[in-house]
Image (cartoon, rainbow, N blue to C red; front, side, top):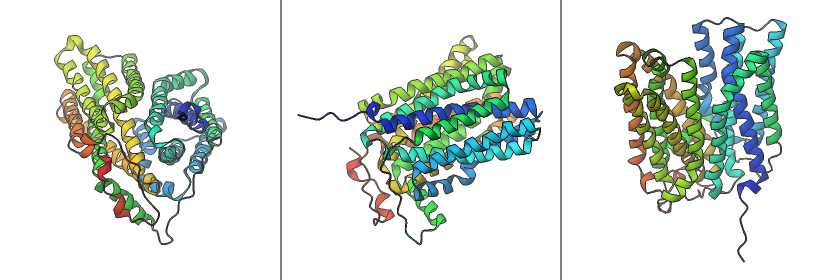
Length: 433
């Protein structure tokens, strides 16, 4: 008689990890809204100071992302997640205390935002790397789908919850509640039971050589290289687009602030649907084609925005449709890409590969935003949107012109500690089935 294999709903460790990530994501969304509101309402921050505050929170992946990958590969991932949860809670607790004492300054918010960003970076790289220790390889897409669905749900509910908390209790209290969510997250991770082994590294390993090893894996593996190039292209042209998107909606289309908020909230709805559809689509057409469908569909969805410009009578449904469709397709691609990465990358390299991907994508964000802002002033808002949409269409070419077209499933890596790095850089022929 064939024994039934336990599913994720019966995997208590995964359920604790999922709950932890869900709570953490809600907390992050609260801070994303409450921190700038605190700066604006309580500290009378100038536009330049608001820009610096945003940069402080988003700079860590670019500045320390590659180093984070090395440390995640050197240490057990579960303690990293617990430590960064406690660390984020501790640093955020200082905000209401400083505010109550009348000592809160914008410069301190810069520092706190940066430290929280660094800790969030380590947490995010660690949990993506930790998941294969909690679930079976054939459950990775299901696990990632559930985790991304929670992140998408937080994207929908978090900003509204943050605004409500700030309106009722004030920004410092909202941030205090965020700190409590990180404590709850740490408590849930403490309940995750795994047999995670301490990584073994050679005595002469150097941090720069380990960074180079992680970069080399991404560059030389055609599947990872295509995914990285596509992700970096999305960040570059996506932020060229986003740099002027809100101005386009408010100035050219006459959208109110409420309408703009609705547009972005519907993007979160699309993301939830996409995270749910990711696994069924992979089962039907294969993991590589599912990634291609997601990336190509993301670019095609962006075409609805220029159509709104050309057909002003239908501008509202077209803009809303673009937001839903693009996020839906994006999540289909992301869930399958992360699962593929986790499947084909040896555990000893997974932290660096994940961090390298984040570094490449995050590095293009400020570049795209600067280019988009400059183009908006030179050629106009609508024309800049067209440039962004055209670039987003290119993202599908990176994956379509790669071996992903014939990758139906991914064989697990056969990496031993005494195996050379070179042997894990190329794709076994059995992987492309």
